[in-house]
Image (cartoon, rainbow, N blue to C red; front, side, top):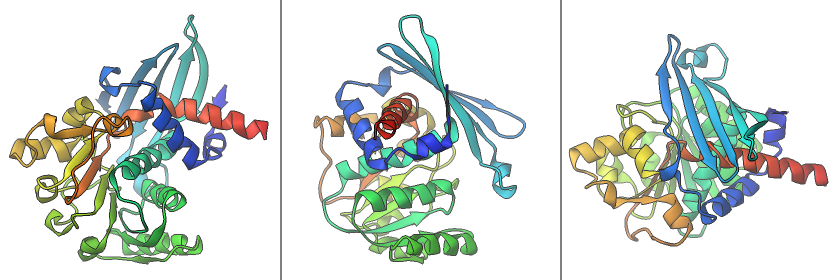
Length: 307
């Protein structure tokens, strides 16, 4: 059975967030999961992300092709293959790109809900690609947003995204980097290899979510922010292998060590809390894309068909 983009897009973001919350509370531990692999190709990279839990096993296969950004093709393309039962038979193949577009903002929203105080937020988005837009839609559907600011290298693309947000009823405009000091919620969705802004200007009450970098030599956040923030990650193992923001800050001493990092599952299950009076950072690496996504889509599709 192939579950395509339209099926995945029919799943409500709130359902995805709630399923992820339940999934972690039921005991899923990413630290015990399979090792992800990365293969350099002539055009970019091939990523493979395996997972196994209870009677189900699956793997996500993605290609990352940077040149596609200028040709109109998706930069990230792929499939998810799910096996199940005692005989481990093939159950379904999912559109990997659409699954990523559901999973990534759902994880970001869950992390933000666990890290930020209640109340309306001024949202600042760095990036103008598909994930930036998916995050605008996701957060506007789950929390009250006063206004949305768009920061992008391409002014025209930033203006288009701001117009799309305005068309959905949001107060939105193209912003400069300087407005980071006014943001309550900052989301970084870029391919930048260098920090995007001066972290010393981030408010003590702000939450910063960084999803763009997934290689040791790339980062979106600087040491000035990471040295003063509570830092949450999806997995200690993947953060130390792939999250350039974390890896480089540990090397410089801005982050004392892995023991100072908070795992999302510990926040969800109430085992840990973040410190107040300092910024909170949630650095994601795509850890939860491996297994819970298909279960969310399957349950969501079942709910849709039952209505």
